[in-house]
Structures are given as C-alpha cells and as structure tokens.
Amino acid sequence: MPSVVVVGAQFGDEGKGKIVDFLAGKADLVVRFNGGNNAGHTVVVKKEKHASTLKTLVTEKFKFHLIPSGAVRGKKIVCGAGMVIDPAVLVKEIESLEKSGYKPDLLISFKAHVIMPYHRVFDVGKEKTSGEKRIGTTGKGIGPTYSDKMRRHEAIRVCDLISSNFKDKLDFTLKMKVDELIEYGVLSSREQIENYRDQIYGKYSCYAEKIKEFVGDDSLIVNEALDKGLNVLFEGAQGTLLDVDHGTYPYVTSSNAVAGGCCTGVGIGPTRINRVVGVAKAYTTRVGEGPFPTEIKGELADLIREKGGEYGTTTGRPRRCGWLDMVMLRYSKRVNGLTELALTKIDVLSGINPLKICVAYELRDEEITEFPASNEDLEKCEPIYVQVPGWREIEREEWSEIALAGFDSLPREAREYIKFIEGKLDLPITIVSVGPERSETIIKPITPNQ
Image (cartoon, rainbow, N blue to C red; front, side, top):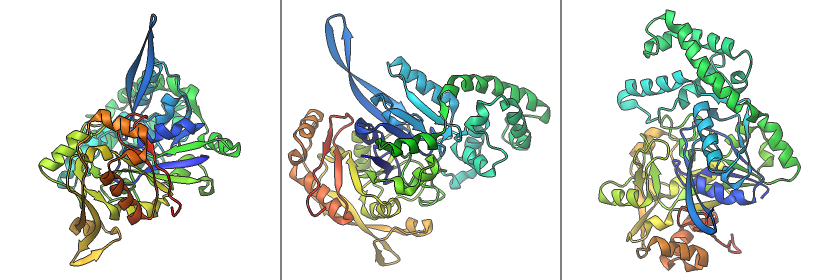
C-alpha cells in the first residue's frame, strides 16, 4: 500500500464504505480521522453459514456510523482524535459486531471528543430557529460538540469520560451551560442542574466502563505501524465539498473531510501519506441544504434515486440527485492532492440515454472552469454540459458477471464515459464499482500514459 487516504470527492455518500472495505483486504490498520455518527458507511459481506452438514452463503449488511469500515475484515481499527464520539452509538456498534461473530480489534483515541445529550438538543434547536438559513444537519449533535472543542473549557474528551474525575468535569461543564440548557428547554430552572448531571453521569459512566478497554494513543499506534512498514488505510467521513474550510460553507460538516484532515485527525505528518484515493459516484448527490449546480429535478431524479438507493444511511433522508460535475472533481483533485479516483455506482446509469457531464460553469455571462470560492457565486453558476451516449439497461446479475470478467467487459459506452472523466481530470480511475458487494468491483488497469 503502504499508507493510503480515502476521501469523498463530492458531497459525501460516494460509496467510501465499500471502497475502504475493499482496500482493507490488504491493510493492517484501518483508521478513521474525522466526523461522528453523522456519517454512514454501508458494507455488504457474503459469509458462509453452517447448519449441520449444510453450508449456505448469506449476505450481511453492516451500517457503520463510527466504527471504521475495516471492522468486518478482522483488521485493527482506530477511531482518531479528530472524531467526535457518541458513546451510546459506539457501544451499540461494538455489540452489533460481536453478535455477528466479529470481535473488533479497536482503538479509540483518548483525545477524541464526546457527544453529550445536550449537544443533540442544541443541534436540533438551532436548526429549527434558523428558518430558511438552516444548514440541514443530521441533528446528531456533531456541530455543537465541535463548537465546544474549539471553546476548550466546555469540552469533554474520551480521556475525561473514563477518568475517575468525570463527575467533577461534567459538573463544571454543565454549570457553564446552564443558561443555554434553560433556553433550549432541557432545564426549567437552575435548581434542576444537579439532577440532570446525575442522570447523565449514570448513563455515561456505564458507557465508560464498556469502552475504556479500547482507549489509547492513536498517534503513537499509527506512527509505530508506519515505522514498521505496515499498510495503513485512512478513512475520511463526508466529502470534500462538505469540509468545514474548503466546502460550500456554511452548508458543510464541522470537521476537515479533505485528505489533510488525516494528519491533524490522527497525529501523523503529511510526508507519511503515499496515495490519496478520491471516491466519486458516476453522478452527483447531495443531502441537506446548499448549492448544487448540476441538480436534476423531476422523474429522472426520482429514477436515479430509486435505482441507486439514494437515501441517507444515517437519517434515511432522500438525496438530491444530479449529473456528474467535472468542475467539482477538478477542485477535489486540487485540494486533496488526489493520486487516483475510484468511481462508484456506474451501474445506476444503465438504461439512461443520453447522459450529461458538466465540464464548466457559466457565471455572469462568462465560462469558468474553476470551482468558485464564494458560495454566493456558486449559487449563480449555470452548468455547461457535454452530452454523451448512455448504455443499455443491465440487470443486477449481469453486472456481477461483468465485474468478474473485468474492465473490457463493460459496455463500450461505459468505458468511454470512464475514459472521458480520466481525460478531463488528468487522473487515473483505478477502481470501478458496479454494485454493493465486494465481488462487484473492477480493478482498472492503468495505461502507460497515466
């Protein structure tokens, strides 16, 4: 490998979970570096099941929100310092894995921040009062937790949660938040603060007991692995255009989803990264509010949504669907330093003819090919499309056969679609996913000029 960062190249939901799970086969460690349970990674695994003398193949589907996707590969997995952890969700995911026969070899950074019950209340409450300026958050408490992290005094980290002084830390934090707790209806008076503290302490001290065996120094473990020449796979949550610094702010997440977030979110130097794989759908989707230049409306959007199962893993919200946007992908290549691209869900486009690809924007009667820094400008951009031929409708079973046969077995129009993307990006596409299962993945040969 030996160290590979996988990031979303669009608005998130690109299929990173499957790509990470696929690449994890050759990894020794899988490390997630940002976000919380506002992310959702779906991994589909076929597993042998024995009953008496009979052997059957069953399909298992895992929906991870905190645990890195490599968990079902039996790899060592790490939740990095750049994450925010909801301990209730984490414990549930650990127990779910164990119930399915997987004992996670998990390390949780003692520096990661903890999502508390009031963070979720603040998150939902602030969205409701924002009206038309709402961001479209998942309501999981992610933003308020990162806000507390930056305010420093009001934050609780995993090391605090498992400490013998947790109750004192919680008491101090809640007293600083008492006015906000009253404002959002968590408390009706200041006198209720001690009862509220005791309720949280009772629940969270139980979570602490269940996770403390997994807590450790993520930076030390990962750097030691790299020193030994082990293969380390870094998994980003969300997507480039949702990065808090480089996305369509303020319609973004609260952490750094770009490749550079790997360094700060785990504690490694940038010189330790060998490859950066961007994951992109063969079209574009977005959940929540914010500008979306290539968005499609009407029946075609509904068709893509249903064929692609475009509903949020975390919230179940329908995703907005649109054509592939090359302006966006060129921007993602630049800010992440992409070395290659993994293209997912090309199977979803079968039977749609013709297809459109956005190659530039029109802004104030001028053609631009660089992604605007200003959100205000982006909202005014009109996509400039090229039209390309689609390919015939292909049933699920045939896609599996195509994946086994390799890249050249793809329909000619699909191969041309992929080559068009490579040419416009000057970037090789090394992985093509044609379905949710591991076996429905094509490793694409790199041509000599790439």
